[in-house]
Length: 318
Image (tube, rainbow, N blue to C red; front, side, top):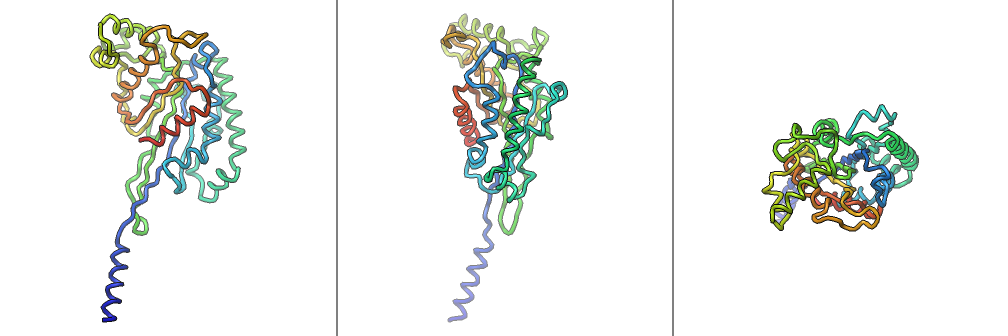
């Protein structure tokens, strides 16, 4: 009888040992993309500067972003910059390495030293200097923010990471998920020189100018339709979708949309529907039709803390 009990216990241990556990590692590739167009000039002043918003992302990465969704298994996150107009890297003499934080190149002890023990202080100081220099040069040498071309040609397999196939390590199934999150800092008006009927297919165009927004509003009012979303769906208006397979592996947070239809002094609404409502419709449809699964459109933030909370919520909800 004693021998039978021992055998049963042994079999029990063998059975439990054969049971696989599943561990999910989630890593974030955070791509900050400022369009550096006329949105950064004093003409369209906003409550918080891009410099403050960007600096706050890096400063509060740990533990605010690092621990989102209970991620505690050696994150190999990356924060990097990409530009809608890559030529400015040379034109403005930008050191992109000073704008990059890469945990994937660190082992566990290096990561702890860098994040928890203040090892990132020098990096943050260098980063702030580089970002301030970038925006100073951009204000003095305004460039076009070619967002359409950026999403079509700059989002490549070299800038984004793909989720790996599951691995079995010590009887443990490890699933490594790579998330590519683009923070697109733009006012929402897509103006890069592609204007006129030659850059449109009927009412869908490669651009979204203030003129096109006003045209859509006029058509909506003339239609007699009282539901803006319903009118948009049937009107034929929109932005021509982007043909880029890599977009299906990205998530895009479009932020700092500036509503040019508001009164510049009081901020009050001057027309209905306002520009922000129309811009949101166009952008959401555009990103969806281009294959982006997760996206959100944001107005200008009233504080850097508000912007950071919006980013954290965006990351936590998939």
